[in-house]
Amino acid sequence: MIIGVVLAAGRGERFGSDKLLRPLGGQPVILRTLANCLAASLDAVVVVVGDAGSGVEAAVRGAFAHEARVSVVHNPDAVRGHITSLKAGLRVLPGDASAAAVFLADMPLVAPAITDAVLDAHRATGQLTVPLCAGVWRHPRVIPAERFDDFLALGDGAGGGVIFERFRDQVTAVEAGEPCNYLDIDTPEDLARAESFILP
Image (cartoon, rainbow, N blue to C red):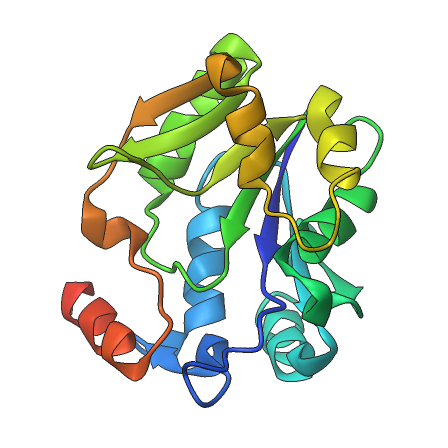
């Protein structure tokens, strides 16, 4: 069982408002991200929200009220670092989860085909797995269950990339997608760029 963990607890300070609730192609950014996750071959999706995420939580629960595969978890420590949200997500995964696929909520253009390519590669190797585009490791990143404790042991100021670097020789990288698929929405200008990639 591979479960998606969507990190949606960021404060969006550079954006000036909650970027995850801003419309993109007619729906909030967070819902577009989740729709792409659910269209891939994940068994379930956990959305991690923070103290400032009540609007995000309401949007998710409202849109996916009848979707049993979606759940929401709170991370009251989100202000202490990105890794705290990943830890919060990993801690609630069921014991039979074989891996977690980690998504960034503000990357709504990651197509299901990209996720499935990464998941298929992970199923074949059992390793840490990432999409590779333009020579850069991207998201979603798949973490096998035997590595969960390595991430849970990281200090709050650390980044999850530390573990991928530590076990670099055990990482499977899959060429997938185009740079536009990995657009990270941090500013209104980023949102406008993302809108230009959405088909009418």
